[in-house]
Image 1 (spheres, helix red, strand yellow):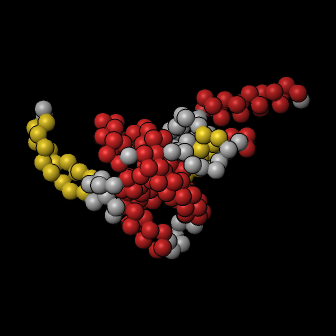
Image 2 (cartoon, rainbow, N blue to C red; image 1 turned 180 degrees about the horizontal axis):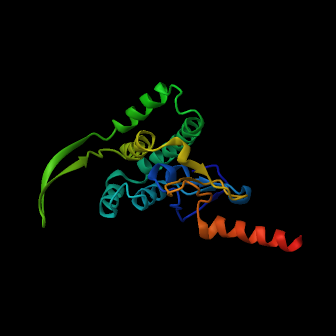
Image 3 (cartoon, rainbow, N blue to C red; image 1 turned 60 degrees about the vertical axis):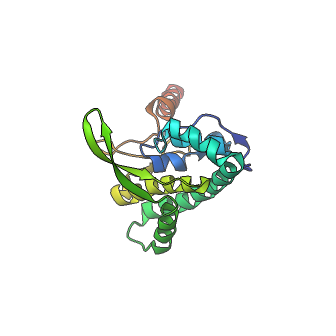
Length: 204
């Protein structure tokens, strides 16, 4: 189990990208550290919520892999998250630096779940789909690694931002037109900031 002080049962999806949401599975509002993937079941639930696994497949994999293997995968996922957080944090400020070691590690993680393409029939006709080969619990991390790969290959590092909320540690990908987004959530941190500013004006 995690050594963080509390385990949060509800996952937050405010990052605008699965890789950012993965980084946000550990956060510290008001300095209180919260872990949301403290065990294997929580990891699977997060992957379903993040769109990395369909719920029916997740249920089948839970039965196939078993609790012990999923616990080990969750522990490795937490380590992977902190490695990814440090790397993406450096990449945000220095996108042109050499990250060969990180890329090699990411490729090895993605290789845990090789995929193949096959033709399937749907109500609209035939289409080609890509199937992942998830033969073990640790292959689940390949799906998370793939989301990190799409982030670094397709997004601008300057648009990965830390929430401006005074007690918030969440990150998000700013996809707004003017790239002026400041908060992980306008109804949470944004609203609290407005209330604090209003009270400050009232005192003055």
